[in-house]
Length: 119
Image 1 (cartoon, helix red, strand yellow):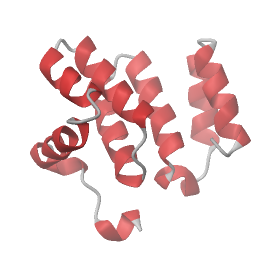
Image 2: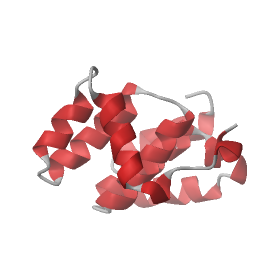
Image 3: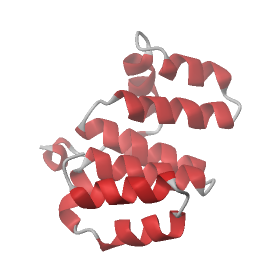
């Protein structure tokens, strides 16, 4: 994480100050909409707030900008929480995660961003 504001938000989440973290995230400008760390933190807050499907959508979008293990791991954790153990295991497995997430993106076509937005 290269932005000190994102580090501060991550620390707020760690000490369970979710409302304060959410407020700080909302203060960040539009330039963060394509930032995978920003999207990861948003997804984490949605997950903590039990907004599981919004969290998954947010994290899948984050993966379109940058493939990071912690994003895959959080998606796997969410599917485990939702008792979809099979999908959770496939996403947690480094050998099958990319194919599994691509398949998921194809099924959930509303979350794929136009290539012009990503570049």
